Amino acid sequence: MKNSRRRFLKFCGTAAVGSGFVPYVFSQPRTLADETQAKNDRVALGLIGSGSIANANINAAKSWIDVVAIADVDAGRATDFNAKHAGGKADVYDDYRKILERKDVDVIHVATPDHWHTKPVIEAMLAGKDIYCEKPLTLTIDEGKLIRKVQKETGRIVQVGTQQRSTFNLFVKAMALVAEGRLGRINKVQAAIGPAPSCASIPVVDVPQGLDWNRWLGPAPAVDYRFFQGPAVKGKDGTERRPNPNTNCHYEFRWWYEYSGGKLTDWGAHHVDMAAWALTLNGQPLAPLSVGGMAKLPVEFKDGMAVPKDRYNTETEFLFTVEFPGGTQMVIRHDTDNGVLIEGEKGRIFVSRGKLTGAPVDALKDDPLPEDAIAKVYKNLPMEENERKGHWANFLHCAKTRKEPISDVHSHMEALNICHLAGISGRLGRTVKWDAAAEQIVGDEQANAMLARPYRDGFAIEM
Image (cartoon, rainbow, N blue to C red; front, side):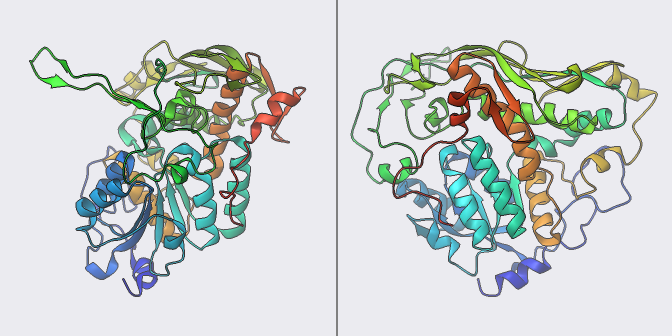
């Protein structure tokens, strides 16, 4: 992969029209799918974390990228990924920092568990790399402050994997309705993100062969590996299926505060992001005054930390209200249709991954949006029909042109901070008040101390 930087600078030039249909016809180029596919113009990518999300993302980006290096603490996953996506030709490492040292790697994809996002993202920026990082970008609010600081200092392009920002027929169209004033001033937004699971005590078992458990834990506290999977059950079609395992590792890390923010940052990073984007497009600053409400915790908590260490501990049910200046409210809840409800003085719309409804949507039959409405919301950047592919196209185009991507770290953290504040409120069982200018919780030292978490010795960010 010699001269990959030269190849990358040639990539994402003028985009051709015609590979995918997107409503409305724009005068500017719309897609990247038909840009040159010459071998020497492909992008060399280094991957950190090779689980299910990485598989989905690399499938989406395979038209433009070559995976040349893989880092994973699970040797089996890395081997499987290499065979599937790189023909076994990628170099495999157990330490991602070796990828950051390589001059032939153009971009980095961080697809690790949440608690492993901030450290490699910052170190990759300092190494001169552009990064596509899965959501949520951070485990804490203070991590977000640091990422934003380093991004400003280095000028690196960082795209967050909130691909709903590239879903043109649904979410971006909804944002265009807001931006065009079809709803009037927004009074209330609601992000419904569904409940989270609980479980019984999970036994300590031997670490699977090939998994470096110490490095998987990384910055998080050192604990035992836990895993339990029930027996197979027979479905209605007669097929036997084993239930999903309970564990404090792959995928199920989402339900442990040690590694995640639970449903609030898992799905909240998507739907709260949409609700926040709508407020911003409506001219309302994302400066929450307070966050509070109801949260059902599956285990006992003391001083904001789970007491039992043997089972899932993130909120299973919740109803939070976020108060903004001027009386605008955001509601984050588990108990209604998954999606985003946006209510304004002139009407309201509901948008999810399956539908966009409401009187302002129906009115488009007789009063369509201006031809360039969606393009303006999308920063006049190239588009693809498929949201995940489009999100990658947006990132690669911005990495070449040095334009701000559609899901930049600054707008992402404005929304994600709301999710983090809700998590703090839920864990402490009380409303927290937020000073948006100082980025501090006020009048509550215990809550304010939860803006950060200590990193375990040996896993500090290398600045």
